[in-house]
Image (tube, rainbow, N blue to C red; front, side, top):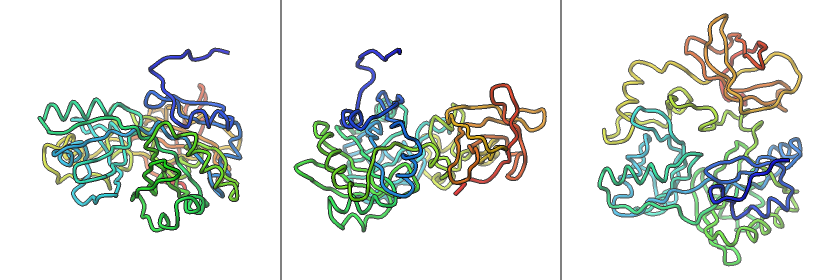
Length: 367
């Protein structure tokens, strides 16, 4: 079997050794790091997330730290969502665009202080982007990648597990809000957040030498609730309608095409990157929109990184950007990015391995 040779361009997270001990079966590259994507039992991993509690290494979710007198100004310049109401210890989900209005990331922005922000990013080099914009605008900020690595605890029993370790104060955290914690000398920030709709927290480890210790603390605390390893689950995220930047978007996708319009504020100052282009896009109308699709037939099919062509009659109408067998629907489902001339309820064909597979369009999320 071919292996990836050791190199300095593909890093591992502080939880890497713990995931190896847990029996990780597959990784995927993400932000120049290794993201665990399977522990060899998809049904068990899905079940834990849906009805129990799951422990994830999401250290690939890097932070771009912006600090200095102009930190708030730069954070807003980089974000097409209004951040003026963001409080200290609050996070906001934010589309980031380039000057064309094209989506280039969708981080959670965490405000740690009036002059200190973290952009908790998806898979793209926002560190270089942020430094370039800051230099071009002559802003007084220092931009870095801090020693911060998130671990996610997700599922309906996640709150009980996290509260058993850190106290019941975490039960009062609102979604995307966070607070400070220390456990056995390990510094953390705890946020009610995570890449699932099943509830949970992200523990932002602030000492990369203590990853194994933190993993074991949570693992031991979670034993009464039968905690087990997992990962951002493709079936749950597709069922729940969660966007994957870079997976469901291409080099021309704008926020209006992928259901991010509630997070776009067009009355921001003109110096916000992308806002002028987005005003024009809004005025003329987006050409595509993101819908769900339910494929005909009941034979399970997996493979969620696909981008298959979608046809309405003889005309190509867009692409299917992901697909998975839905345990809840007992059907093959996915997202499509298609012409706005198509609507939920219509039937289209998806070209899969040279064969047209019919399916019905629907609104998102599926649940």
